[in-house]
Length: 308
Image (spheres, rainbow, N blue to C red):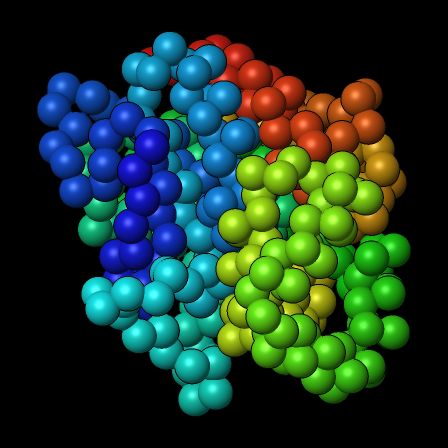
């Protein structure tokens, strides 16, 4: 695995790769796998999932993951590039800006003759759908795999209701809390997060990513994007989905607070022949935390099925 923070759309962005690095020549390789994270968009949470995908593909295809702009900052070092603040740069971090961020990445690092197996998790699936509207990007996409996709009516979901009606009005209190938390000594912050992981059964190898997640400037950008999602992700783009249904696989959860099961059933009624599957294993929306390997094997098998 390789990682770095190249500047994409003016924002240093965390990129992780298995196989070829983004700046290496792909040689005769004509396919890659690209994952767009959900929100929060920290690639560190996707390491187990994507390393499993890579293994399942017999290490034959490069696997890349791109984080959301501004959601993951590099550790302090003399070489750390400055991240533009949220205030005054909202266009970089809103939903439209995040989609443009992915467009610029693909145009810069994916050769035009290389096909992409595009994985989109949660809001990453919505962004992938938007990419299919961009001709020079769409023609590079071989197949899409949308996992627990937030493609519609986010504010109407159970979690969306809680976020908009309860958490958002009290955000100034929550903001004060996480800024105070950031002032605690590192060992205390680490211990608190470790105990939370222990209680919530989250693997401890995500501890470092959890610490980065608690950066106040990062949380501000995560929440800003979340509120954008509540306002902008409304009606399902049936036209775009129907147009591209032959190269889209959708995987819905049965215990998903962001995507009610009725969204799956309504989709099947509107587009009966769409390749949509309902999870029978009770994976969480945030599957990367507890079911990463299991989901990785499934996605790896799907990619093998649709390979050239």
